[in-house]
Length: 567
Image (cartoon, rainbow, N blue to C red; front, side, top):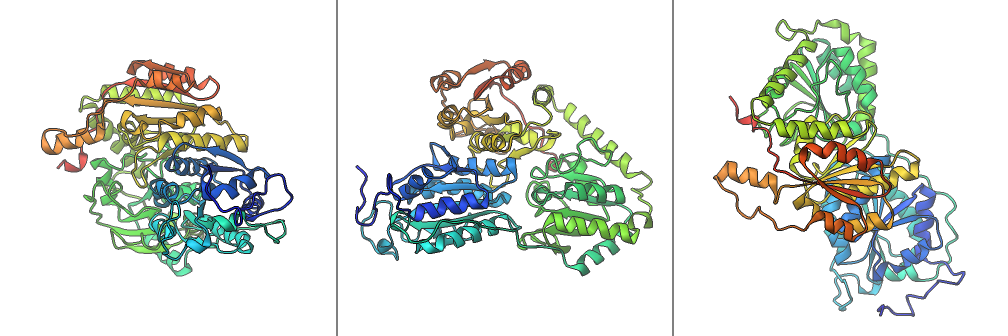
């Protein structure tokens, strides 16, 4: 039985009486939302009742955390705002790990959480189901801002403001919560006719661009690190132009993977954790860092000791100079690189100084550095791993988007995956398990709404897959075209490696797990188990099928050696 007071939770089904839930749905539709992810709950019933009168497509996950991952994947795949509906208390709290990933990675989302009735708020302890002292405070660490709406008339403007904030750089999820009675009570507010949300302008300061041009005009060995902000700011075109003007080698972080053409003669690709690449970046006399904090992975585990000057561009002011001093430029990456590109061309900075890496051209430095990386890998008995990743890359169509969980295959992907015309998405922002499959579901749903090829690939380990195994039901229910590759090594493989390396043995990393093939089939999802050398053919066949499917590979993959420990 649903427990609510009929006096404040008046049913609207079958009547002409609109309620607060209608205002939520109407505003989201006016802003351009097409799809909503989430799970129904008692205090959120007004939202779901109103969706029955609207045009939003609802995708119901099985766990709220996975709903958050799905909304994240939808946004990354389409470039649109992901929308998430949450119930109160446990439902809202269960989403927080997924929201941490979106917040850390800068994914624009609007989160609408229900709340207990107004008369239970303010830390009163009425004993209401799902009651928290301050629910929105729980989201403060994983969202850009949090709002409580206390009157239905405030719903349209609040959602419009939240949408604007979500898409303004630095982008991210924004939290709105609406009490049960505000969602359900009859309203006098007229239907929402239009809503406009435009990102706030976030340009670079003119004097800072001018100073950056001065530095680059005299640089002999400029280099570029392209982080995730480069992709979020849609700065790829400007990045390419700047790199070619300066003849500057470019390396992409895991979040920036795909921001620069993989096979370009100036591309150091994404081998950011390799000591040979660290050597090149340390030798640069001017290093441009875009959309990256120079954090743990990008700094090769804080071993990076640059000898030159740093120009750091980021929309998030807290990131600037957080790890290294430099010329900090707080701006959207797209706007900043467009301004820098134009200023460099106008100043003729590209011709001002000959590029000379100690008698070697930058193009040759790139070629030699990549050859050193290849030689190092070939010396580490990693033939199986290299072939495995190569076979996956060969099987995946050039324009297919891929979603990677925190697993050994993804760690390889951070460095070796050529995104080509597709996009590479991973949980590297917050590093939580369970991202790959639900994010891929959201991505595939989003691509379908835009009319683009919607088949996507998710990659998980056996440990991480268990976080989201219930979403096989979601994929089947909605016939989502996602192929899920589960690499089963019998435990938390990367933690096993870390512990053996650090302590000589691993503890609590081995896992009992199901027969993934039979489990998938029990959901009505086709599945197959193949040997590692058959993964490419299995994926190709799965990509040709309809709806969801699963490929399981039982194998133990190793990581390449910790190059930051080398002399």
